[in-house]
Image (cartoon, rainbow, N blue to C red; front, side, top):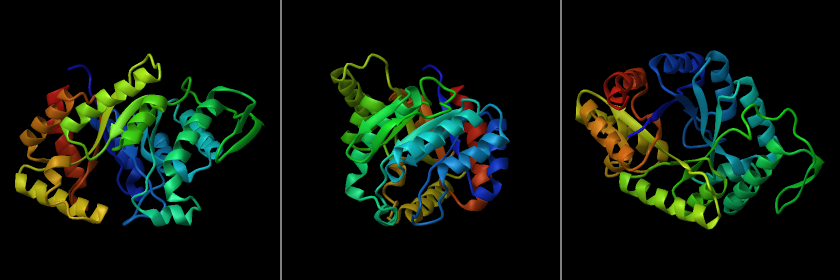
Amino acid sequence: MGQVDFGIGLRRLDNLAANAREAERLGYQFVSTGEHVFFYGPANNGLIALAAAAGATSSIKLMSAITLVPLYPPPLLAKMVATLDIVSHGRFHLGVGVGGEFAREFEACGVPVRERGARTNESLAIMKRLWTEDAVSVEGRFTRLSGVTLAPKPTQRPHPPIWISGRSEAAMRRCALHGNGWLPYMYTPERLADSLETIAGFADEAGREDDVIPGLHIFFAVHEDRDTAVEMATQRLSLQYNQDFTKLVGRYALVGNPDDCIARLREYIDAGARTIMLNSACRSDYIADNERLLAEAVLPAFS
C-alpha cells in the first residue's frame, strides 16, 4: 500500500490556533482550509488562516484546499505564497482551484467567471517563473510583467508543491502541466482511478518525466451509530452546497461507523489515493469528537 498521509480541515477562525495544535498532536500530516470571498455561509481566507496555523505549530504541513487562484493577481499570490512558505519554514502546499460555484464572488472581485480557467493556467505559469527566476517579463492575456524579481523566494525549491483540485478534464490537464499533486473532490473511488489514468496520459503527451502525487479531498462524518453519521453529513453538505445531498452523501462522503469508514477509505486507497484531506461534515458541537474518532478508530488501520 505504501505510506498514506492524512490531513484535517481547520475549524472556525476563533479556535484556529488550538485546532491546528490538536491536529498536530493527533498525528495528522496536514492541516488545511479552503476559502471564498463570499459563499452560502461563512468562509475563511485560506492563506491568512494558514499563516495563523503556522505560528501555532512546529511540524505539521499546511495545505490550502483550495486557493481560488483566478481571484488573485499572479504577482500578489506568488508573494503571499512565498511569504507563507518562509514563515512556516517550508511547510506550505498550494492547493489550486478555479471556483465558480458562487458566481457573485467573481463579479464582486471584477473577474469574469467564464475566464477562471484561463486565468488560473496563466497564473500558475507566471508564479512558477516568479518563484524560480529573476527579472521576469511576461506579455500574457491577463498579466504584464516588465523585468520584475520576486524576493525573497520560497523556502522550498523549486517552489511549494502545487496540488490541482477539480473534477473536470480541464483540471486533469492542468494537473499534468502544472501540478505536483492531484486533489479531486466529490469523487468515487472508480472515478479517482480513471482520473489518474487520464492525467498520466496528459503527462505523457506533455513529455513530463515525474509522477503526479495522487490525492483526494473528502468530507467525513464518523459516529458509532451509522444512521447518525449519515444524517449529520447529509444536513451539513446540503446546507453548504445549497442542494439536496440525500442521494449523494454515500457516494461522495466518508460516512458511517468506524468500520464503514475504514472499508470506504480502503477503496480510495486501492484506487490510488496517497494524500487524503478530510473535512468534517457534521454538527458544530460534534466536530471535535468527529476528528478524534477518525484519528483514534479509523486512521490507525492505515498506519
